[in-house]
Image 1 (tube, rainbow over the protein chains, first blue to last red):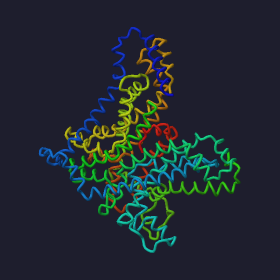
Image 2: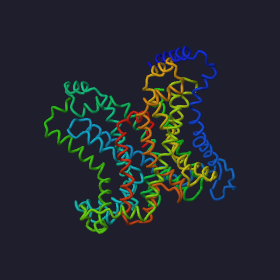
Image 3: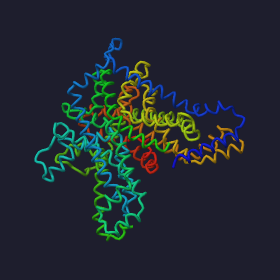
Image 4: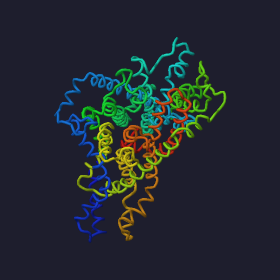
Length: 314
Length: 279
């Protein structure tokens, strides 16, 4: 459907341009869009493309920052090293848990929020505005707030739980191997669920009320209306949101970095965090570059699926 | 709609109470941070916890601004964020014009690649950018951090502005052409004024993202141009138990972006679905 429209638009463009600028040299007209794109492309070459090529170069060398002149070519050595590195496998496994749980809970909570915000009640406007606040805040603040709430002695979470009689003694949430990953995941769910809420709500508003009403008249109960009518109508929005969010959550490391730094031990290491720490603390840029590339390769399928959807309209 | 037939009680139980719980979850941590920041130290360290402050004090804010580098860090963040906005808009407006108003070979590919690079893991860029800035002697300069933030600001702004530009009918350009305006005059006198709401939204979103950004700022800055997010992280290490100071700093960083974000959030939805908005 989009094709003929595009063609007619192109035809019209050509006609109009020809009519108005019949004196212009055709060659110049071909180059004109690139002249407008030039500043963006030049900067992109400098700060994105060149650094990316540099990453490939580094990943093939034993490049350690404090001895830059002694970086021997080691072929795929860094990649081989990663696959035999137990910390890499721990990080990879944590990344999988991390992505599935964070995206899953963000989605469920976001969906529930969107369904509720799509009902009418008198303070809906205020509720919509307030619910996006976690999304607006910097990751450092998110990490700070939750670290403060998880505090062993003075944290509000231990206090509430012990007042309710759910725990006998305070829990060191961010220092115990069995609670830390879960604690960080909760902070990330908090940070990201408004994104799903806003996006799904936008989708819900396109579902015609008559459709739902018709299902109700036909005897569908609330659960059936949700699973048989509402969710299928917004499947596209949900798919886009899930793909996009999977990419971001997979890439995100700032909240973990500030809250735990990956600890205790390696319990909250994820692949991007491991790559970052290899570069930032041990200065092993070659190995870090290889880790970042492995990470990107694993994500490429998701990125491809997403970009194909987003670029459909072009 | 079906909802309206429910009784008032049913609506309170099925809608208003659940959404109230979600809102409490969403803003509880924020309110708790703000509340902590105005409590006297004695209240903060009292056990069992004292929820409501015995007195409201701005002592922590005073200490933070008078005795630490925080005021300078706020200024640094402001300069970096404004720089990122200016660079982002300056190169993205012409690029969006090209994508929206021309049909040329390579258009699809070029536009798609701006989306793809926005999806790449941030570590993939941070690692080589650090080496690059170090070699150029640009570590710990405004230029370096603004360049780092441009890596996400430019692709985002191009996608946002192209979609805004597409919503302005091309007939308007044509009319200006017919009236004898040159291409640049058309852009400056006709398109830009119509694009203002889109420019404002894009600018605010770049500002918020740059202000909030932590990893590039941490990697590329040192003592000279440290931004607020990096400074706060340093304070977490330095003043471990001084939660009054930390929460005051957090509140100061959070308030401006909360306000800006609330202003633009409704208009962000279209940018979201096109995938340009990063969280």
